[in-house]
Amino acid sequence: MHSDRAPLSLKLAAGAGLLFLHLPILLIFVYAFTTEEKSFAWPPPGLTLKWFAVTWNRPDVWEALQLSVKVAAISTVIAMILGTLCAAAVSRTRFFGRETISLLVILPIALPGVVTGIALRSAFSLAEIPFSTWTIVLGHATFCVVIVYNNAVARFRRTSGSLIEASMDLGANMFQTLRYVILPNIGTALVVGGMLAFALSFDEVIVTTFTAGQQATLPIWMLEELVRPRERPVTNVVAMVVVLVTLLPILGAYYLTRGTDTVAGQGK
Amino acid sequence: MTAVRFDHVSRHFGDVKAVDGVDLDIAEGEFFAMLGPSGSGKTTCLRLIAGFERPTAGDIRIFGAPVADLPPYKRQVNTVFQDYALFPHLNVIDNVAYGLMIAGQPRRARHAAAEAALEMVRLGGYGRRKPSELSGGQRQRVALARALVNKPRVLLLDEPLGALDLKLREQMQEELKGLQRQLGITFVFVTHDQGEALSMADRVAVFNQGRIEQVGTPEDIYFRPDVPFVADFVGSSNVLPAEIVARLTGTACPAAIRPEHLRLAADGPLKARVTGLSFLGLTTRVSVEAEGNRFTALLPQEAPRPEPGDELALTWAPENLHLMARDA
Image (cartoon, rainbow over all chains, first blue to last red; front, side, top):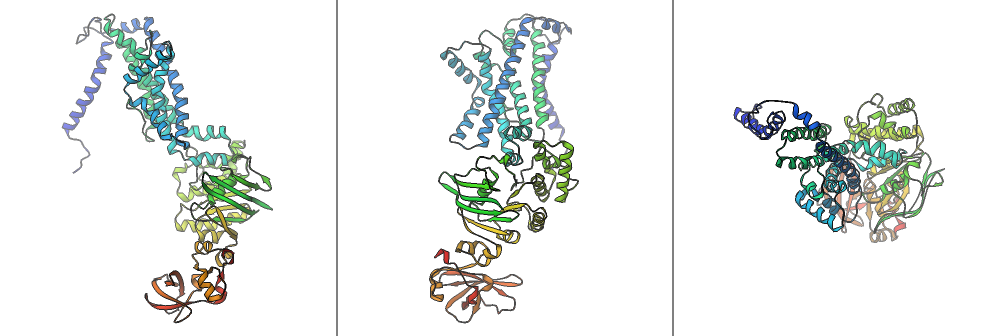
């Protein structure tokens, strides 16, 4: 017999699993309010909001946050342009090596970040490119392109090619067809791909470690902060912000594509 | 006036000659069918008229004007696509009004015109629905309204009834024919269904392997095929090979004879053996084999019915044997 109600044991197991997944994150939030700054003692000896003020006044936090937002924004824009064009080419036309290109585009997301990072680092030093914001952007773009590409290609495949012909048949030129038919049909896929790409770039550590010079993005800054026990709860405040900033676009992506298609590339 | 003229038009895809040296004249106001098996080039010809394909060689004119350099959006031609190609993100009224919107008509005027077009295809009041909420037959009507609202001079229809069930298809055939008469627009219609082509079209072009085998009225195509392919493809005439015709009539060319004109006799010059029978109601279809060829005869209800295995002879009235001299 198949019952609609789950047995109590299953509910408990599911609850335990969820707790195991999310309790550590909640702890991070709690320690953002602790009064004790050297070690994370449980239970926190007292609660305070002063770390928010401290964080607000730390210029290094602002620099890291600024860099992260900048890198994520530029990578996302690059990824949306390149990923969409690539998806359009792969799904709309047939040419020699099409499957290979499709595979090569997806490869960066399948490779471990360490490999991508090392490869990019040696490529940059071979080409004698100094490390800068732009090297980080390049590194991030490699996997952001994949996210946008995957989302766009799935949508392109479901969009019948005769829609474009129908639009042109009804008098629309290429630009009108792009504006009135193609973009409305792939729009949500692009927005979703862009949001996921932004979230991925924002909390990326491994590739960034290899492609950043002296600069620190927010996640890198947090790693450095962990070894330096000074005003520790500041890290927790920043962590909270990072969680919120990356969660919002992912939730948005989820709501936009609910019931339409799966969001490719959530797995990384 | 000639609506569409093909002058030695070819469209090759690499080694594949999809359309190969086609000459064609479609008169204004005509209901013209392009009939042929899949891969015979009929759809490519339609796409050449619409402008989705460019000819490899030859000249296409629409109302006398060469269209070689005209993209689809500059041709006074509209298409009803095989899969209807309705825009899924627009509701029905905006789908129908799309061409008018592109042409820059204000919203109120184009919606009024679109509603009128929807009423013409008996879908008045469906404007607010999304294409996904319509049945196949309704989508087909929307596609038709979306094309007609632009007042094209030629309407192209690519297997428009292919996805509909039999009953709906027969009903739509009537309606299309009626619309065409009412509007006086030239309809060019692609189909692989010979019944559809014969019942709807004023003239039919039969395509085979990128070429036109015969152009003519449905009666021409049906009763007076030029070549064995047409005889066989359109209404499955029996084709008598040239050597049998030469022995029986003295003329060495293949000949066609319609199944309903074949008679079974006890004795005659062409001996045949009955291989199968099927009862069709008004008639009985008899499969026979004669000198290694298979033939089909349709016997009227009152004719005596043979048994499978019977040794008989095939006869016909001489005027019903259509000689296909062109292929000799």
